[in-house]
Amino acid sequence: MTGDRTDPGSRVAVHQSGGSGVARVPYPIGVRRVAVAARRYLTPRMVRLTLAGPQLAGLHTYQCDDHVRIVFPDPDGTRRDPVPNDRDMLDWPHPMPVTRKYTIRRFCPSKLELDLDVVLHEGGVASTWAAGCAAGDPVTVAGPPGAKVFPHAYEHYVFAVDATALPAVARFLDEAPAGVSADVVVETGDGDLAAGYPLARRERVAVRWLPRSPGDRSALAAAVASLPLPSSRVFLFAAGETGDIAPLRTSPLDKLVTGYWKRGVAEFDH
Image 1: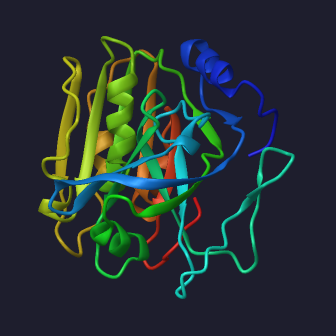
Image 2: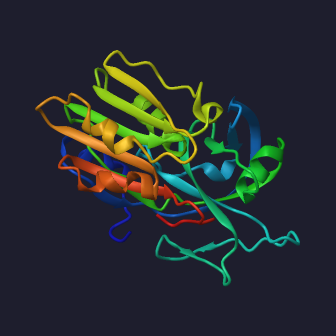
């Protein structure tokens, strides 16, 4: 993502209020040493980590699916964190340390707190860390690098996601204008993975859960095609496993389609 990184908040606000389609807005990228302040389960397979610390001052995040990287130490405990440069970007060591990307569920600049919701699964580096970390544990956070901004002025929205994109949907529902109209379709292959995940109740927002049995193909694209959409301007946000959401890339709607992960790939770079 390239371009002018000055005053990104104003640039995002302008596009959210009156733009069309998707605009890329880069942020000044920082590296911050923070600590785990709280940890709680949202569902049996998803945990919310609240990170806090004075270095969160000045963090830029304005879009519902902004993400940061958690930078993990080497197996021997050595930290090889990236270093900010004079271009408001980062210089990474080689070989690159292990990192994982997570959507920012909430950022509170007054309390200097950052919430990340982590899906737990067998054997994952970040999953193992999130399942066992405790208050006070140090964490290195890099980013966010910038936003893929879509307007908040469409007449209707469609969110087609799996559990990994629920934090983005939840943040949108928290921050969207009053009276927002949306269909949210959530596909989950494991009943306890996303069931009970907290989404704000909005009068004109309908949420549909799509249980998926092992071996079945994704039903997200078919579910979107079956929606009785209004004839006015509609925006589609699709995020999740890259193969599952691939059919939605050909949708005629204005859209943002982004793969958050890929089966069999440990660190998929979307």
